[in-house]
Length: 230
Length: 277
Image (cartoon, rainbow over all chains, first blue to last red; front, side, top):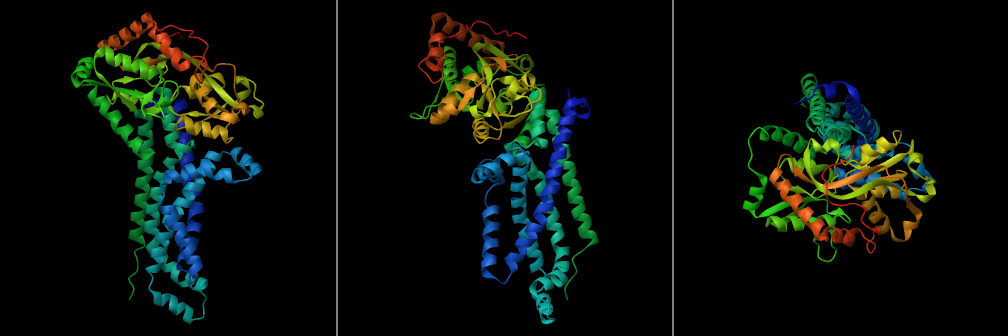
């Protein structure tokens, strides 16, 4: 009944592997874009300037309170309509399904990660910041040399957890025709009329990497425990 | 998407279990319930769509399905389903009958039983006139958009192997993608394509349906595999409608010259549940 050979060799295997590769690429690229963006957002949220603070706050709340599905549809169907014709045509010629998914995932993930980074920084006692400033360091230098290294230990576990969410969220890109794992699984289902095999493949892939990410989080917490503040 | 994915996994497991257990005759279950649940697309003019005034489902397949329910002597209950959900819904018992622009093909015969063919149509491609594409072979190497889960994607690949096919959750999104220029052609059943083309209004003149068929599609109602008595009831009703001339009248009411589709006449008869190929 269960046709394992469908998953191990042949055109359907290739389709599923291609989907998995694109899902992993989406994960990697989104992380690479979302991490710096979320750090910037967290710093804006903590900066002494009220305006910067308000901008970052609005961004985080706007993004976090709209479902990812809506983000995907917006970046694929809505946003390009605001661009000039030539830019739009260029984008449509360059695998726009993946570009739109990357935009949606990056903005969505960075809003969550920014909040995690911000709480990590806030977990470092304010006196550390004050001590840095007393030594004559500026806001950003104090952040870089004093606060962020300490905050990192607190922040990494929740960031790993966000990475786990991101990995699962890549599957939503299927609605805009991005040929990731869920898209390819559905395609194999349509072509073979077998639902079980492609979705078992997808389940094992999602579960496998998710468990790996969870394991990484546990390992980090063991080897880099948060230092107690005196 | 996460939820349907879990549902699919779980339900696939459930089918495996359920198929082991013996099940009662579906026709007698329907009679006992006093209603027949009919899976329809509901957004697919002229087969099944919503009347903007009454908010009720109307269309060619709806009329035929109502006649079937009347013949069995039960109330028709219409349930709107997605293209990709049609066969799973039928297999899992979510619906008793599929009246959902379902193509009858050889591959699907292993999954479901088909009624007599209710309409014969073809799949075609709609393109922008400015694209310079004159017929189907010109689609080679181009991006083609269509809906997920139907026969559109495999048929496009068969007709134009080098085309890059991108699929969406529903026809509206695929059509939107064509209008925005994300693909050069939108592939769908001819009847749906004509209806969607007409909906463009003033802009319709900028688009054209390519003359060559990508495939010939016999549409039929889907019945759960092995439910011979239900199939007999459905086929008998259809045969009766054909004999009395009501079938042709219904076809012309939804597809005929006075509709958006403007089919001049009916070029087939409802008399067979066999297909070529």
